Length: 108
Image (tube, rainbow, N blue to C red; front, side):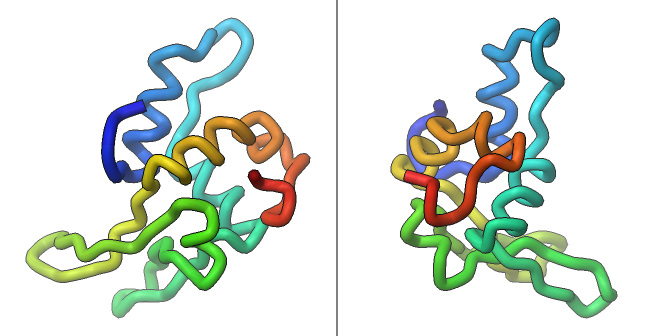
């Protein structure tokens, strides 16, 4: 895993470097975020053009997920990043998370 705070797409790219494509399909950041939203570790908010954005919630920090200020097209937004604790939790529980065999209480 890369050092320091990383976004979910960077996490997925790191996993994909070691994944056996004969056994599993490539991982995407969107797929991981979707699962984390399903179990309540992340949330979603609507933005001005009716699109949606992934954001942290009250549960996120306990799982090593933080929101930091980022910019897109000169507009500030909350960038969701994973610290070392978060990277470890997601990596340790990745198979269970992606197969729907986990809840936010079972992530450790």
